[in-house]
Length: 124
Figure 1 (tube, rainbow, N blue to C red):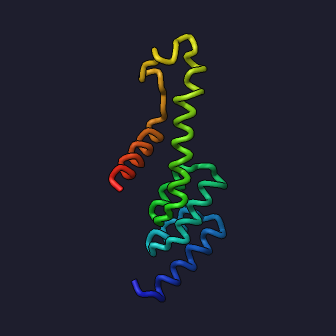
Figure 2 (tube, rainbow, N blue to C red):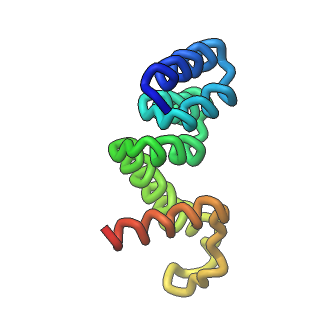
């Protein structure tokens, strides 16, 4: 795609984003590989909609490692809280050393993303 056409599509994507047509903005940002637009979508989903897993995908596509690392750290913290303090309250009748891995309930999407991040970090 030539630079003039790309610039036109980016402007159209920005207009769509500003008018809250996020589906159209997404399509145009992906088509043009407009990293700043993808980051804007990530920020929208991260901060306005409070959907970090959706934001993660946009940050990943844009290569925005600072935000990817931030989400990774939040996931690790949340998992630690779930496995640490929170889970023991739910099964406080058992001593900590008697806990069974089946006692831990982690959302499958969170588990899959956490495993993916750990695998990617291991390979880096």
